[in-house]
Length: 117
Image (cartoon, rainbow, N blue to C red; front, side, top):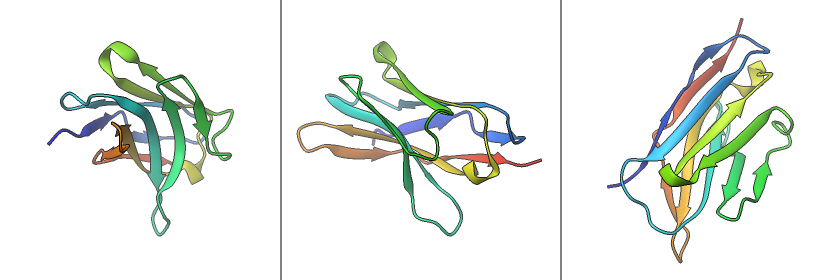
């Protein structure tokens, strides 16, 4: 089954930067939105940023001004540039793709981001 595949997580010090990327393992037709969610220990999964096919972006208040979502259309790859990282950004980051008439959800396995000194 096709699913998004994330890469780029890791350990970074507070104030540092990381870049995540995600691409589907196969072909997903009629992609509506691509985005990133995160889940910290003991917390619910929450939206980080999404990008629609028309270029509309949505960011969580907690990351606005620090994170940037972008997409390579030809490769259906979505990126998340994370700057000025804080310890509270520590979480598993999941790539999400919604596609088709019924906005079918495709979830990646997640990549760990740890912000710590």
